[in-house]
Length: 130
Image (cartoon, rainbow, N blue to C red; front, side, top):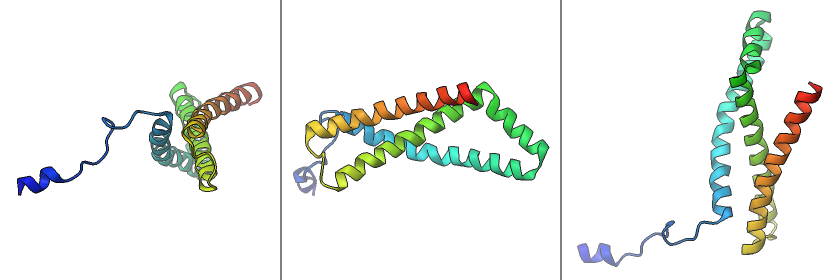
């Protein structure tokens, strides 16, 4: 029986594959998807607080206005934008385009650059005009 197990092929792993930007973006896409669940719960808390009355809304507003709350909002906005750009990247792949190694690597890097850039632009606009 041990001879049969040793003859089975092993599943490919990071020790076999070279780490690439597309792998990092795949991992980040999953992490941001999971993080969006937590951020959406906080959004629901804010909406329920707004509907519950001035005291509850003030508590939620104080939390989101704090440094910690703003860091959470910054992270949530980046996760949302990164997940969106990752989805656009996958949509492009679904059309059969951008599947070569070079192009997929460029799209992976563009996903990260676009999400970080748009998050900074969004927060600069919010802080400047809001």
